[in-house]
Each structure stands twice: as C-alpha cells, then as structure tokens.
Length: 270
Image 1 (cartoon, helix red, strand yellow):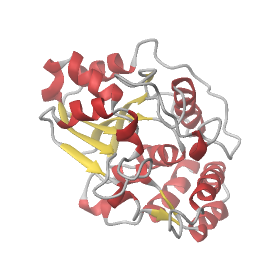
Image 2 (cartoon, rainbow, N blue to C red):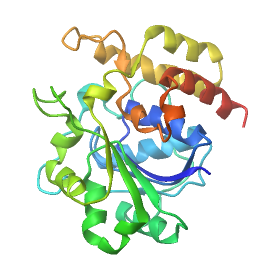
Image 3 (cartoon, rainbow, N blue to C red):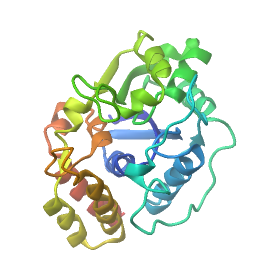
Image 4 (cartoon, rainbow, N blue to C red):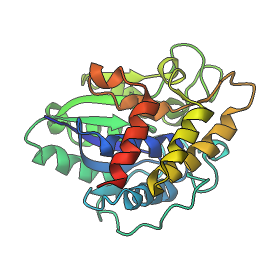
C-alpha cells in the first residue's frame, strides 16, 4: 500500500526535483501539496508548485498557499541560490489551474480529517505551515503518522556557520515541530550533502529527450552553477530535498539519480 503524504514545500530547484520523484513513485500517495515562503517569496513558491504540477499533468492534486512570513521574524529568501523566480533556468509552463481558495493549514487539516489512515507530512521548506497546523489543530495530531523534514545540521550549517537555511528562516516553528511529540525524521545537511547530482547524471537526463527530462536537466544545470563555488567543496550539487523521498529501506538504497531518470521516463509515457 502506498504511503499517504502531504508535501509542504518552497520550490526551489531541489523541491521541484523532489516533487518529480514523489509524484512518480508508486510507494507514495500525494494527497495534497502546500507551499511555504522560503527559497522565494510566498507568491512565487505557490506559483512554482502550480507550474511543476502543470508540467507533470497533475491538476488533480489539491494545492494551497501558506504563511507569508515566519512566525516571529521577517522573511529571508534564498534568491542567490534559486534565482528571481525560484526556479530559474528552464522555460516552465504557466499554471493551467488555480490553487484552493483556503490556506495551507486548512487544506492540511481537511486532508488529515478525511484520510482513512494516518498521513505523513513531508516538509522541505521552513516549518511555518506545519507549526501553525500543530498549534491550531491539536485534535489532529493522532492523524499524523510522522513528520519528515529537510532541515538542520549535525555539524556546520549552510546559511551561517552553525545554521541550516530551513531552520534558520523560522526556528520558532521548528521548535514547535520538534517538541510536538509526533515522530520526526530529520534529513539534515550531514545526509543531504551526500546526495549529490553530477554533471554526467544531468547529461543522462537530457539524453532521455522528453519534455520532463529536458526541464529536469535545465533545472539541474542552473542549480549546479551555484554549487561550483569552491567554498562548498562539492563535486556535484546536493539535492537536499530529495532525501526526504525514501519511505522504505528499499527506496533509500537506490541512488537518487537512478530513481529520477527512471521516473522522468515514466511521466513521459503516462
């Protein structure tokens, strides 16, 4: 049986690639997608979710926009990494459908209430929306199987010497999530920095030659440029958010670039 999940994200190049992985995986049932401010402003991250779902021909998935700023701080964005649009590089399609009229928290709560089994929340941006859900709907905590986040670091950060970006943007929200009593699976920088995509992998995607694989390659081209800076010491570019898409040991054991190549082909033939 596929694992039911809600994705809360802030696209962002690695968020976009993680969406491709999740929506193509037979092991995951994506019940809703919500957007958070983070890699870009809230308007742009919501638009990027809709653009990616338009590309992937999935207007059936409910989408809602989330909080416009962190709980107690001003918003910090990562436009130096992801560009002016948040998904600079390829010519993505314009959204072919509109988001839900309600908020991210309302969509999350509705999805949890209506699910016959507990749902895993997968959060690849700041934890603002998830924290608001937990605070406003304590009666739904038992409907959440676990919260999987891309965030944090066991050693050095990537935004300050000590802080990882997603946690740094809204640390108060992260504290609410970690203190909730709900099981939390954290993919921190010590994990995500090992999930690097290399130039040869990008060329493999480009060689597939369908519209989705071409856009995946162009997204990765742009993302790779930022990570070529010698200060990072990377051979490739870490696909941080893709590390949250391993619901089973079998999935985790398969390299990300192999799964992504297979799934880019799958989408084209649907």
